[in-house]
Amino acid sequence: MLDTCITPFRVWLNDLDVLRHMNNGRYFTILDLARVDLMMRSGLWRQLKARGWYPVVTLETMRFHRSLELGDRYNVRTRVIGWDEKHIFIEQGFVRDDVQVALSVVRARFLKRSGGVVTTAELLQLSEITQPSPELPEWVASWSEAEGGLALKQSTFASSVS
Image (cartoon, rainbow, N blue to C red; front, side, top):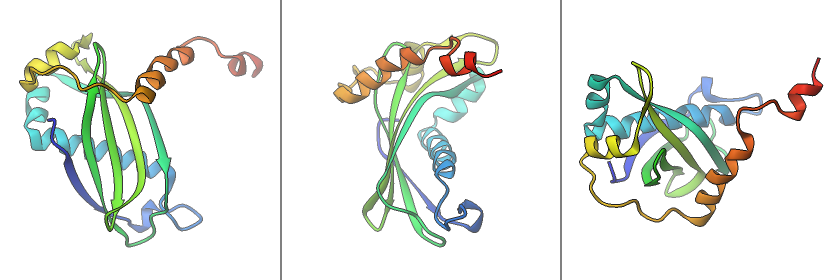
C-alpha cells in the first residue's frame, strides 16, 4: 500500500471537452480508477470488499500544468503520503513522457456498508502497516484543517438563492 502504483491510460475521444483537450472533470474520474488500481494491486481491495468497507473522497485538489490531448498516453502515479485519525492522504500525478501534466492530493476515509466509519487504526491493521504516518507536507495539513470552514452548514450563497 505504501509503494507508488503506476497506472497507464490513454486519452480517448470521450475524454475531451469542446476545446479538444482532456476535460478537467475527467481527471478526477481517472484518479478514482488509479486509486482502485492501487488497492487491487496491493491486495487490499479484496479484504475491503469482504468486510463491507469502501473508500470515499472527502476533499481533493488538482494543479494543472499542461494539457492532455487526443491519443496521448500517460500514467497516473498514486502513492499514500500520510494519514491522521480519520483520513488517508494520497498524492496522484499525471505524467506524460516523464513530464508531470497535473498533480492532485486527495483526502479519503473509509465507511462501513453496515453503517459507521472505519477508523484509520482499523485500516492500518488490515493493511498490516505498523509504522507511524510520514509527516504530511505543511500545506496539506493546513489545507485539510482549513476545510472545516466548509462544514455542512448553510452557506451565504445557499441562503441568498430563492
